[in-house]
Amino acid sequence: MTDPNRDRLYEELATESRRYLAAYVLFNQAVADHLGLHPTDVQALSLLTAEPEPLTVRQIADMTGLTTGSATRLVDRLERGGYVARTPDRQDRRRVLVTPVPQRVARVTAVWDELGRTWQTLFDDHSEDELRVITRHMRRANDLSHTQIQRLRALPKKD
Amino acid sequence: MTDPNRDRLYEELATESRRYLAAYVLFNQAVADHLGLHPTDVQALSLLTAEPEPLTVRQIADMTGLTTGSATRLVDRLERGGYVARTPDRQDRRRVLVTPVPQRVARVTAVWDELGRTWQTLFDDHSEDELRVITRHMRRANDLSHTQIQRLRALPKKD
DNA sequence: GAGTTTCGCTGCGCCGCGCAGTGAATTGGG
DNA sequence: CCCAATTCACTGCGCGGCGCAGCGAAACTC
Image (cartoon, rainbow over all chains, first blue to last red):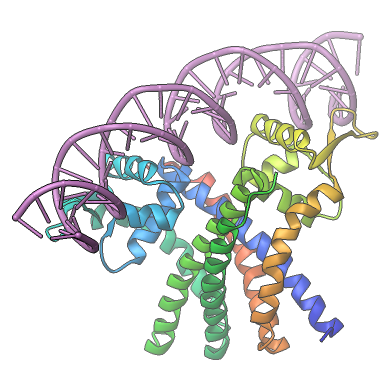
């Protein structure tokens, strides 16, 4: 139950996770500054390009955690910057599909890939099993945090 | 060089990382909402409690990525909320040391630990070696992103 | 001891954001 | 079939965090 060795590993991993997140936020900020965008916009673009199909405004709102109103404004900015295009949905005419503009978005992903290349060198001395371990951990932590978020939102607010 | 199997793993890990970090940001946001704070404040508290010694305002500014002015305001909010206390530095009287107030901060970390406990159940079927692999990856990615941020800031801004 | 640098702090304006409400489109129940 | 309820994206409005520029005070430099 309380293996002191494992406890130390847990502790270490917890602290490292915090720094990991902090580093990501800083990196995201740096990318945004570099491109003259806002961190939220970069984050949205990252999520948008990760999905195979175009998203609706509401989906973007859910994934970023903003309201639909703010999401509309976000898409406004991205559209004005030429990063995405609004396309009406044929099936449901209330909906608006937001599709990324490849050549423009490439400018953003280029910065990401710049990191990605260095990442590869970082991964190169990992075995395939180790890579799978990391990926699996992230996926599970991802799922877990979603349920945790649900719980937090359902709970009464403190103070 | 181009092992298709590894390439697929890289691809998978890259996408999963995005989602993982996005989820982390969302969780941070949810915690902030729950406590009636701002995400930046929670992040600062997280970093503040992770360090063994009190930080100066400038150090907080550097770690969070904001200007000293905004950092001052951030400390103002945290102080007003009773989360931290300002202490003058004896050695350098220009400096102000920001020390977390344990009993008040405990309220925040309680929410983190709530996730931590569930995390433990998630980790329980990992071997110690696997835990070390994950921790090591995060630490290295952390270091790497810092150098990347330096590079980004040095580069000329695009657009 | 005068000049320079660093510290934290403070007006100011910008702008992202949540809130609440709008019209249009879709869905469901009698 | 029609009318109510829901969902969609969008829009004023006010709040407030943030960067910017400048401020005295304290520390370092020569």
